[in-house]
Image (cartoon, rainbow, N blue to C red; front, side, top):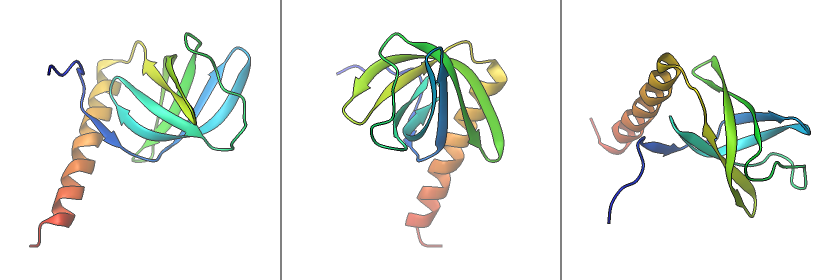
Length: 113
């Protein structure tokens, strides 16, 4: 089996906003990578964009807000997945570094000192 992912992802619950031409909603991430995120409704039944919808997302990593254009790539029963578009190298590096810090922190909690 081949891994088609370019970026490592991590399970994370972050506040996530997505604004598209017909709406603006608050969501919560299920997982995040430098390539995109899977999100679920913050309030069940709130409107959600359809696959192919383009908009702008925003979320915070270590107190720094990241904003990026994104496109909805998949629907899920309780939310959807977005692919980030046109991330700067600095934004991409920030996300990847945050993911590795989160993984290191989780590992340090499992291994006794």
